[in-house]
Length: 95
Image (cartoon, rainbow, N blue to C red):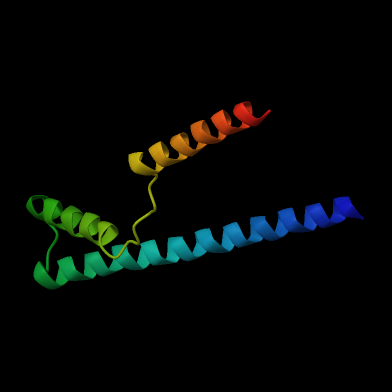
């Protein structure tokens, strides 16, 4: 019975991941479509000379409105390392 619970949890996690990726894909597609619409509003025709403008709009759409990911900063790494060293010293001192 315990194995079945683990399998169910695993499947729920997989389904949640799939749904999250689908939502991200929809958002990405809408951003690209919006950038293309902006380009076509500003430049009715796509030519070789204007491809750079289109690509800039698409890149700008992908970079803007994107929630910033939480990066592990050097400060957090140093704090974690310091806590680990202090705990190691304390454990060795009291044992």
